Amino acid sequence: MNIVIFGAPGSGKGTQSERLVKKYGLKHVSTGDLLREEMQAKTKLGLMADSYISKGQLVPDDVVIGMLEELVANNHDVPGFIFDGFPRTLPQGKALDEMLAKHGEKVSMVLSLELEDKELVDRLLKRGKISGRSDDTKEVIESRLKVYYGQTAPLKEFYKDQGKLVRITGQGSIDEIFESMTSVVDRIIA
Ligand code: B4P
Image: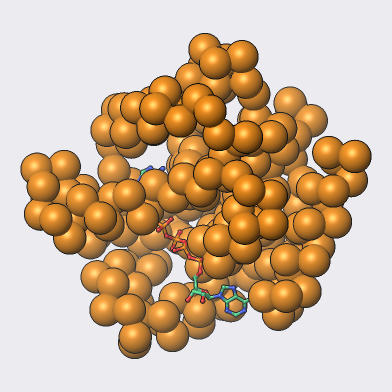
């Protein structure tokens, strides 16, 4: 089972993914977390990623796709993945299909967390006060949302055409949203 958790910045992807991996025993793959680890370690990749992330832009496709290819190839014995924050562009979506196909796998479902911009901005500003993340500031959040609507949201059509897109409200308590998500997953895998 390979699940893509999809949504705008602040929609709850990371929050829900952590819970879903525990329930279903899947491997959590968060490109945001992986990039932040590189940034903290000040590796060459991390310094390069920082120059994009701190401006609210996406890290180039070839870098993120390369990172994921290695991870998928090195984890062929896991029961499946939860992809959190990947794919974020059409080329990434196509690359994910190809890298899974190499291992006889495919994306099973795409759970899209849907939320109004105002709530997204409020959540990220709130997180910014404690996280110290350079991308959780008003100006950068605005640019992340623009990037989301321009480059990431078109993936919804890509997955809708494949019959894999399931829209879930991202509004409500973390527990309520988790319940909606697990009821969809349980129905699909039943
Ligand atoms: P991410 O780390 O993926 O950041 P994000 O989109 O902001 O989502 P995140 O998972 O962190 O937040 P969540 O919605 O769970 O990416 C950061 C950056 O890395 C990107 O902007 C990009 O530059 C780069 N990047 C990552 N992946 C890439 C890729 N594939 N290609 C290129 N570049 C890439 O939660 C947000 C907040 O809301 C939290 O504080 C949480 O506690 C709160 N929250 C969650 N659910 C809630 C609820 N129900 N009610 C109230 N608050 C809630």
